[in-house]
Length: 106
Image (cartoon, rainbow, N blue to C red; front, side, top):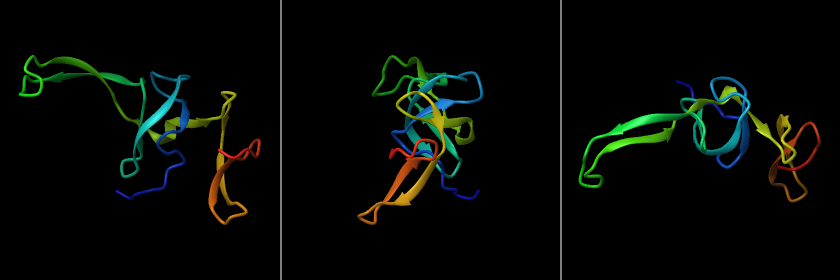
């Protein structure tokens, strides 16, 4: 599968646009650019059964965040509005991301 550049990165605050978690917002904790999936803190929880092991002698059932496809999330600004991000060079020559809607630097 092709490795594509995603419109989001780790640490971004996003809003889920589709699926069971539609409308909820959270912070991205992991990005898999190869599969184009993102893991959002506290969202899309699935039940994971663990066998007893040396680390966890009891075993048991735990809730873990599952990845969501990157096309189903949108960036959110401080006001809670979704927007598209662009990139441009600043005065020092470094690339920075900004909101195409408001022009604010992210």
